[in-house]
Length: 180
Picture 1 (cartoon, rainbow, N blue to C red):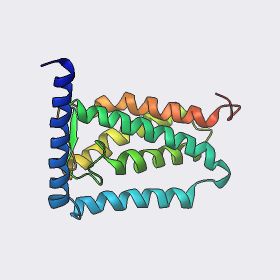
Picture 2: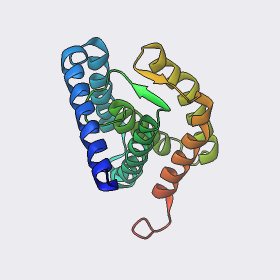
Picture 3: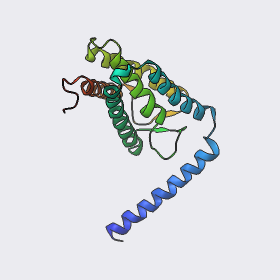
Picture 4: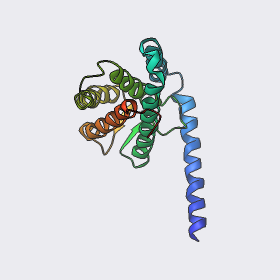
């Protein structure tokens, strides 16, 4: 069997597994309380942001938010693919990441933290954010059986959260927002 044939075979096997996951999701996850929790958390986070964000800072904050979403989904997908963790009650079975966290909670919390107390130290904010997220947020979704770390410990997340926050903060505070 050639390399191309092996790759095609693995791709086909992967597609078959994805179909099984989608079927399982439709039969046993969709409309469960954990699914509703994820959906409502996503909606509530964005409604909170809509209500409380500074309208004049909207584009700066959304720049940070979209950066956080992109990095979060990417790192989450890599972690799932490498078997570092898994999600059991995804809102959408097509994305190997937890949508409520990656596309709502994390970006909204970071955008609100950037907005409130703008002169407070970004480093201190990033440390507070990372500790609360790693030691309260992650254990809560572990407790609800939504998230299962396999080869990961919550304290591994701390430096990652700090770096994500600091880059997002930097994106919103450049002297010339239109220039990189």
